[in-house]
Length: 277
Ligand code: PAF
Image (cartoon, rainbow, N blue to C red; front, side):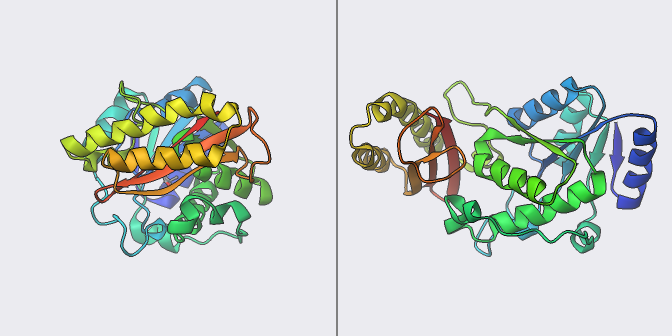
């Protein structure tokens, strides 16, 4: 496994692989790796070729009062597991170099960026697009892998790739959950024992909703009731709990293209999840 920090050196290695006929697969991460990330890596390994994982805690996607400073950084362990998973290249860009890297692209803003997480985290999607575009420009991946847990992020990146006509195929990899149904997330590290118990309730309740929603009986009433139950269970704030079509457009009717989306705060930790109906 090669550990690369310089953009120039990475380009040199990747150019050589490309001219030898290899395809390049990229999994962008912010480190603090867990089973969800490793599933992305596993999927990328299925398509034989060079597997690149980037690790960079991107300051541009955090708001001023968010957790950039405290975001878990576990590089030593991350490198150990990536080696075990047979990753070829870990790209850990130098902060100054990647932030000043310019691309020829000017990415438009999409309407879906203003929904769900975009409402309470206005810096998030512009920051994600900014860094992912730089990573795509540097790595020129044939395929890039993103998790279904961050479904809105996956859609924004897919839209960006299509609108800029980039030659990268975007793949969405199914959410990995622990045995309690809690989706794996680096932010789960913040939860205390008591908060963890509260977090588990979110998925437990979410799972009960699809059959109720499919009956098409007063969906808003069902969602409002679920919010109340979650607050009663100790969730501090529900940012959103809603049902949208899977392209994030407003639902006119419930179909197999509908999804339930939730963002909730437990203490200072903001957790998100989504499931198909
Ligand atoms: O999902 C993440 O970890 C980040 O948002 C990403 C895609 C690596 C961009 O910083």
